[in-house]
Image (tube, rainbow, N blue to C red):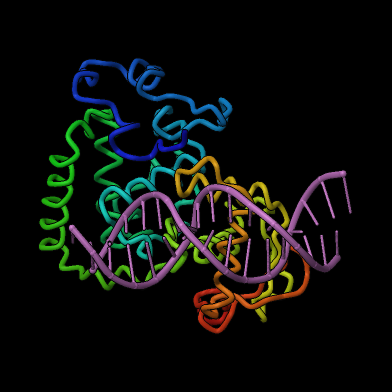
Length: 254
DNA sequence: GTCGGGTTTCCTGTTT
DNA sequence: AAAACAGGAAACCCGA
């Protein structure tokens, strides 16, 4: 039942959001901010917690949501700059957001400030909110003259890679999120090992909002990459190797 | 609407 | 015996 991240299912509807509602009210309403079956209390989704109390994981989920919802280019975002708790995030200045994510940083700062001041009433009307963000984007582009390509000077680590192999690659490149699920066997040759196969499948399932994902199914998808040269066979259990058509994993090319 | 890429799901058989 | 691998087949999802 992890179709949680879609706008319609986890954001409150218009009738719920009362501008006078306190943060406590806003975030403690489980009808609208459910704790999912597979989640423990400390594993709650970002929407169930006030931004100042977000964990690093909540911050990551929020970034992922913003990228998905507002089509922000994840390549703009330097993950290491956002490897912070909610409290630290809330204390970041707009300049620090821009430093961390270029023009996207401005949007993220704008979105965060709106969540902090308005709660999720900011998200009441998806289209209206998108338009607000777009207006903001347009005005800040005019104001700053920043071109979208400039974003690409920031970290290439993607937070929301749509392809499995990119997800795996980015997990290998993000020790903060990796949690020992994957590890390099030979960094130069692109050989890596799946240490926690079930955890990897669960994480991929969360990424794809599919709680029925298993390592068996994930590994079938990985095996299809042998055909396309994204991965190469390594005849050892749980060991894979990036192929000639995989990019972005080499240390010296990051 | 449809087409294609990228999975996801299911399956049977094999290997470690 | 259990977990992982292998790969065919078909369904599914989503963006173009």
